[in-house]
Length: 194
Image 1 (cartoon, helix red, strand yellow):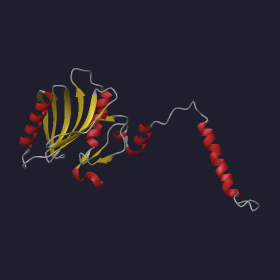
Image 2 (image 1 turned 120 degrees about the vertical axis):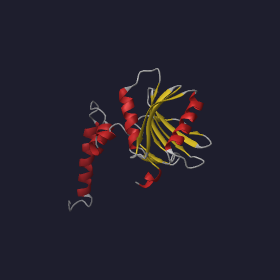
Image 3 (image 1 turned 90 degrees about the vertical axis):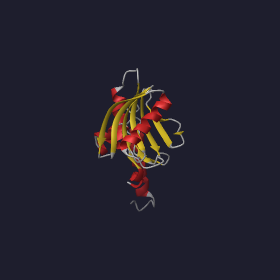
Image 4 (image 1 turned 180 degrees about the vertical axis):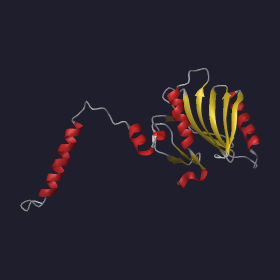
């Protein structure tokens, strides 16, 4: 520190920092920082393009929607709450549905009920693929409704997490990849504290 000036050392440090900021901000031609690359560098390529995970109390899940996707208005029914995030094109969605069942039921009956509900809301529903997955634990399935094709992780104790695309429109492969990775990173129920 400079003995002649009580703030000497601090003033010099502040002046150097200010000069550095002026220099850096003066480069208007430099591109903006790409947050997806920063996140990918920190957490691996599976998180590139996704927001930082957050707990959504409405659906009782830790969600990780793609950066820039807009949350739709929360949809609620007698036995479910449904949150959807849409891509800028509107062609692709990431969604989380938290539902309750009146009685404990097995996977087949729960899936049948879910598909019937989808048919009621969309006017049509066809199960395209189904695979039991003990790692969920639950079912991975693909279904087509009147408007959407959904690729779903169905957790029988109360969640359906999906990546969806509009039927009859070209699938935007990059958007679908983001939605699928968001689906896979979603943690339901007790994941709040993780």
